[in-house]
Image 1 (cartoon, rainbow, N blue to C red):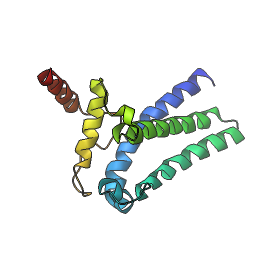
Image 2: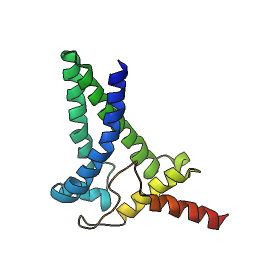
Image 3: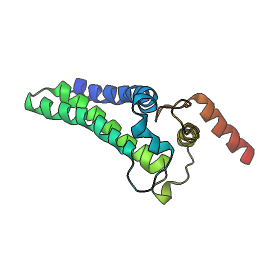
Image 4: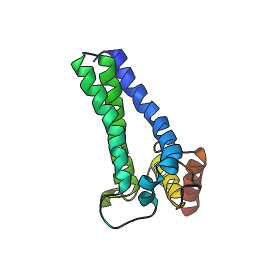
Length: 156
């Protein structure tokens, strides 16, 4: 991969935070709420209808990589890899860290990661599609960073 293609991977990864925010805010909490609702209001079972969104984001990634390789387009492959890496980050951050699927990740000494978890918790306190906040995953509003810092100072 060239330096430009590596830059495109990172640029695509960063753009995916905004793409995911827009999709979460306007599609998942809008027209596609029927797929996302079970992520806010738990239903029995390991899988959720919300898991369908994995495919919605995975298909363009796969197509970019496959078609890019078939047509020797490094740009297309780089975009596909950026989307795929964001998907991997989503799986690790959202599923493993935020929702604490693995017990050893229950606590963190990082102000940033605790703010990520707090922002997501604030998002999940809303059980309907109309109200909501914090639709992103990696970008958190500075107020959550301040809250975590303040709570750490008062607990010391």
